[in-house]
Image 1: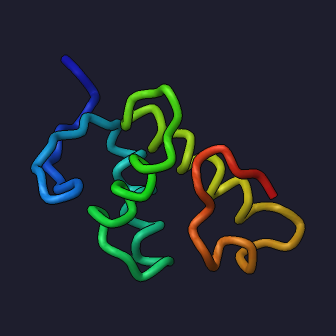
Image 2: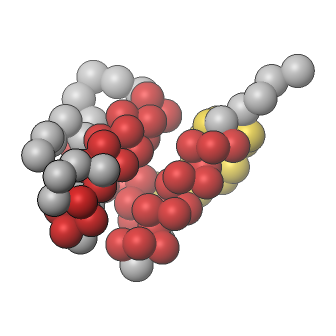
Length: 89
């Protein structure tokens, strides 16, 4: 049995499905709440800046970088704007 959860989102006006672990979905929704944005807008931004990887892989990297930056010495202030895939503090 797969531990991945399939959800549909809209990217650039087209419906697509993503399969992520439940914890990844929870983290993505938490980021959307913190950043006051819709999940489709966030995923579209990630899709626009990803380089040579799948969208699901880019989302996982984004989540890792986002929360790593939030846990840094300066904390939440650096995550007041979404950190794009591949950017570091």
